[in-house]
Length: 270
Image (cartoon, rainbow, N blue to C red; front, side, top):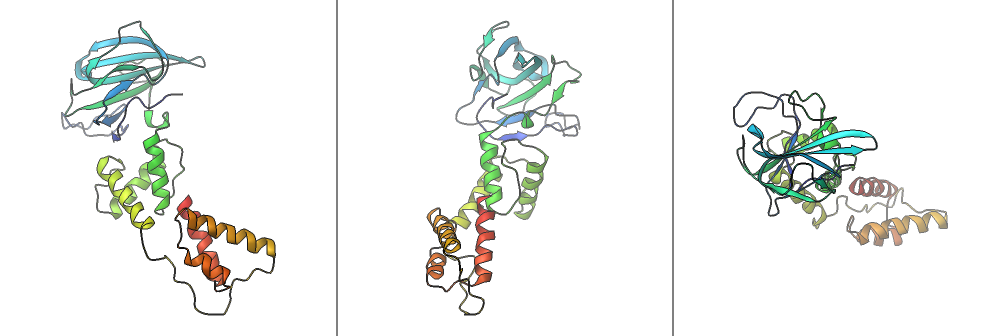
């Protein structure tokens, strides 16, 4: 439906009780913010018609676009722009450049404040919805995949919903980061480092059993072939060390280790 309107990580969530960074007062944040990057181009999140393109109070330079999607009217808001590339009543295509991120209006730094309203936008915010659950964000997908690799449980859908917020906060707390559930640059870098530590670890998670009791020796040739292929694939994609495959071929893999390996590989692959 909607695409991500710019590059960059989410730096502030849709939140009814956010503390305003400018005024210091607790007031609803009716959209999401994307931080500054090397490419601060802003694009239309969907096909539509520009309804506003000018300075507008606390929003600074902003653009509103009206969309008719399958008979439903939406309006998107793009605020705090440094420059605007479109005019009122102009028809725009999804992905078309409409401006550049800035820090105009009530802003503490370069970013995009983005809102989605069902129906036309109004200053009572009666139609506003959480944009993070309307956009399949590639950066969020990557975050969700990495969280799953290091033992957290998130559906990989690209939507920054409650479950992702909860798991991000849990990771932040466990790693002594600010546990606000927002995966900005510092948190993303930390998650990436955690994943790399697992992938590059020279030590296997489990030590091969040297006991000869309860060895895993499938009586069925079909089962043996299937499990050997399972281990071979896991070795090839770097999920496990090759010694597990070698032990299996030499009939030196215990039943306990065989079951544990299946669980570990499934967890790492999400």
